[in-house]
Image (cartoon, rainbow, N blue to C red):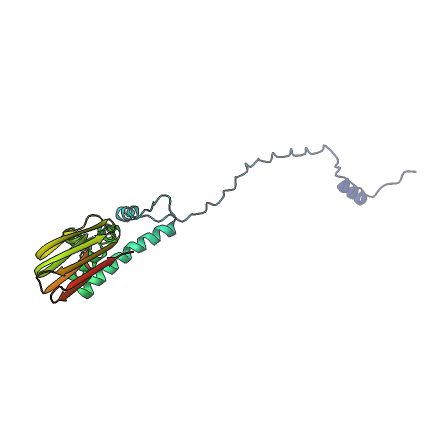
Length: 229
């Protein structure tokens, strides 16, 4: 015996199974999923601090002091410039405090080698307003530079001087001077009166008085010594 399935139940079965009566509806074709190209991840660029730049004058000064702006460290270069600026400041302060004449004399006493190695390049490249001062000092050193021996007597006298290279003796009257060659470290100068009652001796080195003595009386003698050792 055939049992009739209620219409409501049949409809539920058809709904669950996806079946329909009549012509089945066509299934939609799956749509193509577009392919998205992968975007490469950009690596952030780290900014590096730029190296300090030097003016032509600063680079020129550093070169005179043996530095190389292309290879030396920033710390060494900064220290080199600080040394140069210190030379400028010291010169300016000496002029302000003692005046130009005394500042020049101080440079003269420092000597040619010292001035040419320190104050001259600093003034030339870092503080050109002080260059005329340094130039005057160097001009004066040329006139009074080196080791100069001076002996005087108010009559006739006998002068003797010795260095590491030997010695000499001369008779003179009034005044005797001699500029020694080279840069001796030890000099002894003595003056003896022979027909004079007063004698003096003096040794200067680049304008700086290393020694100065005087003596009075018959057959008096004065002796001066320079020892840079």
